[in-house]
Image 1: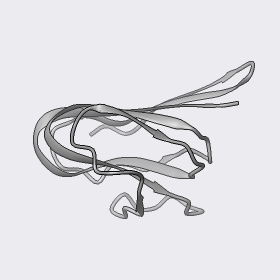
Image 2: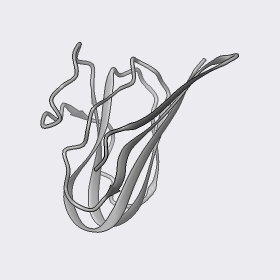
Image 3: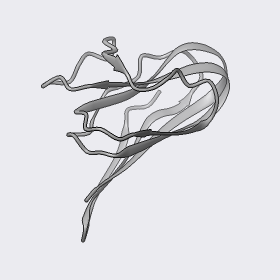
Image 4: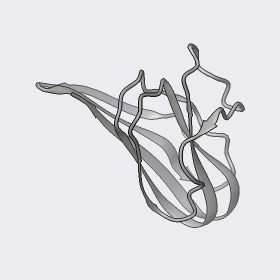
Length: 114
């Protein structure tokens, strides 16, 4: 898995953010924490699941948690492709694959702060 690929841009009415939380993952992974800085709502689009579990994990720790620390799970375990909304402020977010059999999994985050 590559490091988070991040784009932050300012727009007239707010700030837009996008990040790749998982990029073509083909094995179980702890994921990499990404600093949202409280931005919400954000969506995470997960795609490429054939047979795997993906978890969206969040933390409000004051400093970046270790990638091996999983903090709180946001929502249910994801077992099929879809778009998931985090509608409350969090400092840190990551996508984690605790169980993997097959698929090439991407998880992309998009948010807009008004």
